Amino acid sequence: MSEKKTITTIDNDVATKVDVDEAVLAKLKEFDTGTDTITKIVDELGVESLEDLASLEVSDLTGAGMKLAKARKLVNELKAKAAAPAVAAAETRAIQTQFEALLPPVPTDDSWLNALKTGGILKVDESSYIAAIRAALAFQAGLYSIPDALAKAMEKYADETEEQVDPTFYALRKSLTRRTYGDIFAAIDGLDGTFITEGRRKEFLGRIRDTLWPAIAESYQTLDGWYQTWRASFSDPSMLIAAIGGGFGGGAPGMSMITPPDTAPLHDAGDTLVDSINRVFRGTGVQVAAAMAYDANVIRNTLEDPRLPSMVGVKNREMMLKKIGAAVSSNYVRLEQNLVKYVLGFAKHDTVTSDVEVNYFVALWQLGTQINWNELGVSGAGGVTGLTGKRVL
Image (cartoon, rainbow, N blue to C red):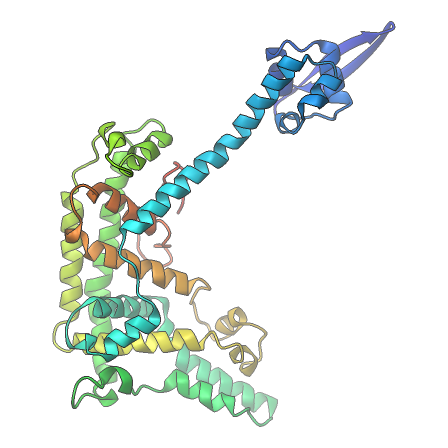
């Protein structure tokens, strides 16, 4: 709120002093409002700020002595100004929705698992890419350490209570610790769960740590650098929204405002990411990735079982994870979904036509801002500025 200013009115030789917000006073004087009327608006109608003034109707102002034409103009101006942020936000959401449609969709868990079961593990395809990303995130988030810790916590609590455990204890423990993979390996004769040894798991996780994760991090750092370079060319963030929004709906008039930076570095980053994923799949990597992603899916879904917290003596899922020392965040599912969509989108960079290329990469960048890269251990991704010019990370 701005500073107050005292005004004085005289009625029947009686002086009345009223403190008026300077912004309110200046706005009312723009519309030739007299001191007596200002006093009534402030004192009788309780106006202490521009927000209060914007809440009044024309009849309120005329009742206080303001001329009808002036009152209508003032009310229209204040309401239009109040609506502007909402309109801008709606336009931004509309652009973001249009961006979202440019990116490849992420298959549901059921369709992804069906792809693995019907032979997707025999070659490197989209289901394999998703498997590698899910395995990478599960490893980074510490998801694989949860089954053992949770099973021990369940057994310990059962001993502490000195009561017979519910039969569901064994079913839940089995779902967390079994590793058979019969469904996803049925397409390959001779391959079963015994092939996925602890040594092969560790070796694959090493590939993820040393090869895949750095490539994912580098892709976003390159993408953010490209976008921020372009954004710096605009003095007003709304101009950038207009520019990228102009690429939709038949033609791209907005794009002519300022030419975006060369996208060649983004294609190079995409090629590096694809090469890194393919290197992760060398040898038996496709099968190990499928198994580990399947594990992550089972663990993630089992953790949603409402019966689990009571079996370790706590009230909810968050307290359960805290008790066993797990660092998996409550938004893990959303994080996984966004990361899968981001990597799939970047991996398909070479399928994008030149007419939508810039908007596609902006869409990919916008999706990237929804991923907490710092939480994933990706350095240099903090302080990301969004479409509207506000800090989003």
